[in-house]
Amino acid sequence: MNKTFKLLSAILFFLCSYVAADYSFENKKIEDIQISIENLTDSTSNTAALLKSLATQRGSYFSQEIFDADLKKMA
Image (tube, rainbow, N blue to C red; front, side, top):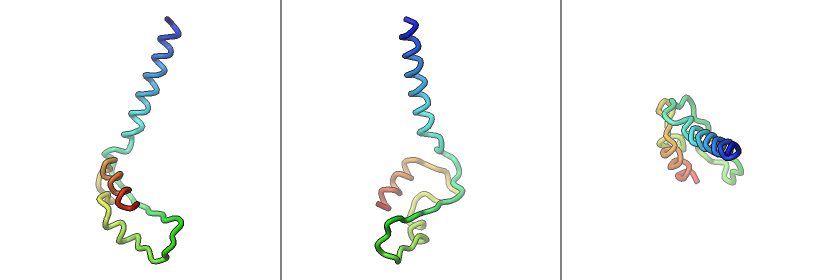
């Protein structure tokens, strides 16, 4: 019974830490956005235009859903 309790406690601890890690940036103010483009084939990329097209903006509050949509937009 003691082993079972320890195992269940470890699983519960793991799941709680996983959930907390997912939301560690949620609703925190965005101070800066940096875009790094790798393996660029065309040297005429305009990061300023790209930043303007994103829903995630400097000074706003972070949302994982909005960030995910921005990533899809850039892909």
